[in-house]
Length: 122
Image 1 (cartoon, rainbow, N blue to C red):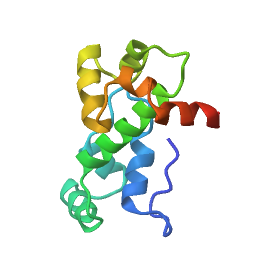
Image 2 (tube, rainbow, N blue to C red):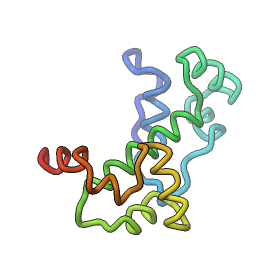
Image 3 (cartoon, rainbow, N blue to C red):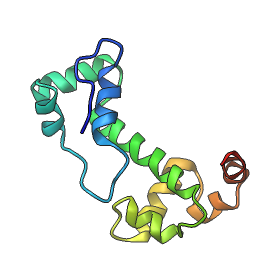
């Protein structure tokens, strides 16, 4: 796990994103694990993230949302495959989360212009 800890041009939020990563089939590090890796207490981590107008949970949710959309842009993966990769035990839970994040179900997303545009880029 290569993280530029303490690098001056990297925000704490960016460092946390780098540690969470994109693989949600394994459990994300806890706020405690992240704080320890960054050599700070959890309360310091939370306070410094608040200074950047965010929270650990918000960052984790953003990473999961972005990764979900990224995987949904791979037509070779079924929606159920994406749900599994993203660490959802039940596809229905993934469907609910995806709809909350994007305003559409995974199936609607794959029929949308957003999906077509992303396919054209690859």
